[in-house]
Amino acid sequence: MRTLWFGLLQTDLDNWELFMPSSTSSYRLKRFSNSTDPDFAAALLIYVRFTPPSIRSDSREITYWLDRASDKLEDGFYVFGFYRNRQLVGYAQAAYFPSEYLYFIEYLAIDEKHRGNNVFFEMVEQIKDFLEDAHPDYRYGVTEVMNEPGQDRPSPAKRLLTRLLKFIGFRVIQAPYFQPRLMLNDSESELSGSLLLYCPTPLESIHVETYLSIIRTVYYDNYLRWKGENSSVKAAYKKHLDSLYLKIQTEVRKTPTVIVNGYREFLSAPQRPPIMTVHRIVSFSVQALFVVVLLTAVMLFLKWLFGLSNASFAVIYGLAISSFVAVAAIVSKEARAMFEKFASLAKYFFGRRQTDLMPTELEPAESSRSKPNDE
Image (cartoon, rainbow, N blue to C red; front, side, top):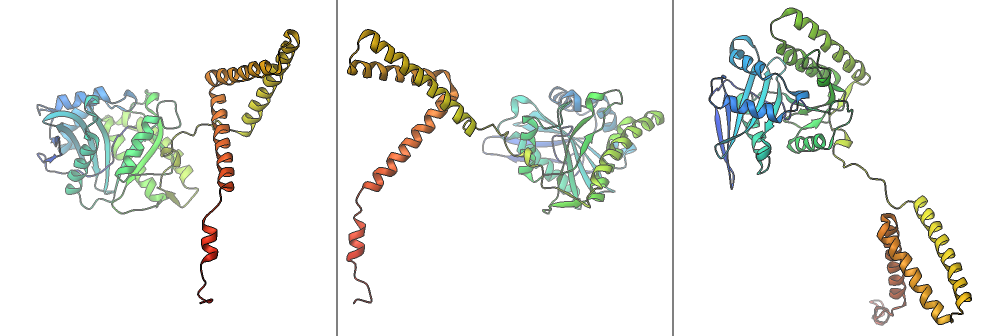
């Protein structure tokens, strides 16, 4: 989850702003053209406070490239602030690579106090509108959803993020993906995860070469440029990118195409083991039978010892069985589930039996109807 939103478009309209009122709030997206903007520092603070360290770039690098993007970068680099009711509540960062017609959303951060009120969807929709107006000839948009450090499967939060992205139109590329280290000595920032693809027309798969081309753009055009102008640093970092790219290339070349309809586990909730299984039913029944037999033996012994009548014995025995059932239902979740199933089964059985025994009044009516042929 280096990036929280999808790669789409960017523009040379430095002061382009959009207002989109809703029923209760107004929203505005603003592009920062340089670091001297009065709100840029506040937006960058939102980015620093609400972006996990494992996916967060150095804020000084963002400031450096924002001030020099027009002179030193051939592709687009965009930093946005997002406002709700004139209050700054979010930060977004995007890149556009014209050689591949590819748009890449690197970061999207929202102040946690403002994550309700539809802010997330309003922010994304306005970013989409901004970028699509700037680059209507784009082919794909991409973004990353990365796993937590040391994990190879998405956390519940990352599953939710993926669901939201898919709701907007993104699809999970069913292929391996790795976030490069943000710094060579920062092993915690090398994460596994997924690359999500947005396309204006529906598609179920892409060619392997298309996927590898996207990877090369993200790795060498985006990540590598953050290493500055030091040739030795860039050379060392390029070796790191080469190793990750080779790992992905080796795996995806086993098939000619890559599916982009997503991993099923991203959308389905974690499966819980069923409470009712044959083994549990048999085990519970054996244990309950043992308790009933033991209780019956004890009650018969007490009847013999105290000379209880059959009526007294029946009352006491019934109370003992009822107490056993009540205690078991209180202390055991499994017992409660079993009793509920048994009760449902009994209701179903006796309900069916009563229905079968009820006379029907339709049959005489049916038999009394005259057939057309008889007339």
